Length: 351
Image 1 (cartoon, helix red, strand yellow):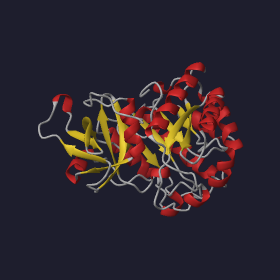
Image 2: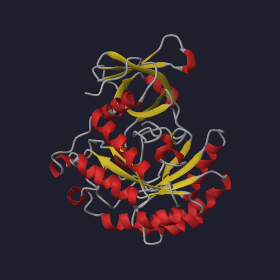
Image 3: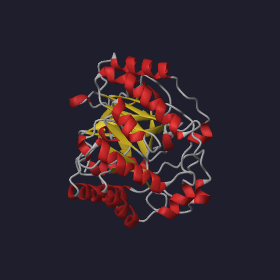
Image 4: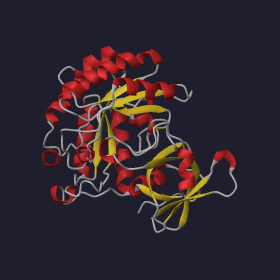
């Protein structure tokens, strides 16, 4: 069993694995006031859409946790009476015992130091783990997005701009919307990353527009599971697009979310990580979020379950070894998920 270290003042990779595996914590509403983003409210992107969260920082590591009021929760966040050295202001208790001390980290837009903005908050694809198709979200206008980025920039804390999107009608329309936005946002002279469903020319168009990093999600590399949970998507096309993107964006600039917990074996994960690294792509091993709007996942994937801390740590360490073997680094990324690291154990940062 994954056990925390003997000195819980600072978070390490093992403690972070425990926090990610649990996923949510009871926290006093007053503490959440310190984590307010420029755009308050729940996430509008991907499997975590519709859920409120906060960021906790300790020992150079960052983790994102869903928040809820439940005094019997496995994780409980409580205020430190006297502010400790280094700015720590909270303790996280795990099963009634102190686990780690740290501080609540304010988000900017979706995460610290980034304007991470969802364009279309709806999707024509109906992936079985994702609540976005059930939420019926809206599509932001270009002017609205530019105003959001400008507000973030004026705080002086903005380090990157990241754009993601569902699919309101057609993948090509989302790519065009992203291309036009990227062109208008290069004036900030900040790195820009984009995560969309690919088209045949999306990589070259986004690169020429000014994006420096790209993410196309494979979701799972278990083809049998993929066929059940992402029936609207084409895994071979996504993989071909990733390979093409690696040639256009270059080393350490192309990523893919890879969900852990859909019933895939460790062996399948290892083979998938090796296959992606082999074409120059850095996988982001994303813990499955069991969303209340997708109870159908249990029927589609009876073995689906949130992975435990031991598995998360084991797979992250394996991924680091594979990335090292292929000369790839997860800690040089500038946009989107890897520099934030709140949802994942990031090789070269956390392990």
